[in-house]
Image 1: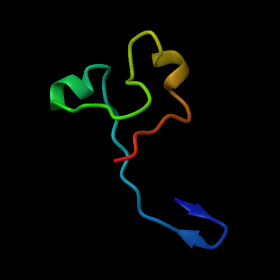
Image 2: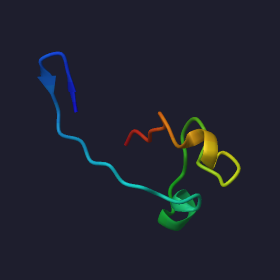
Image 3: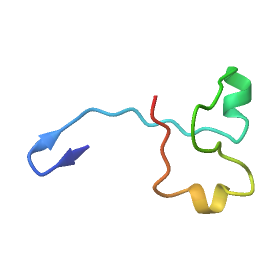
Image 4: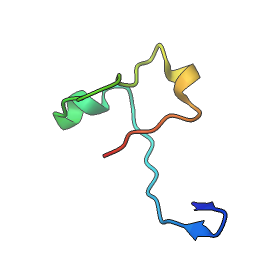
Length: 49
């Protein structure tokens, strides 16, 4: 990823709607991905870890 002259390495993973439950994770803020929001979440959606 780059912005102006700044560059950063990123990792990109495609996940399913049961990712948090499968991994045993607890969401601290926001919402998880669901089948209902899949069509609207397919752009500009991120998980920050």
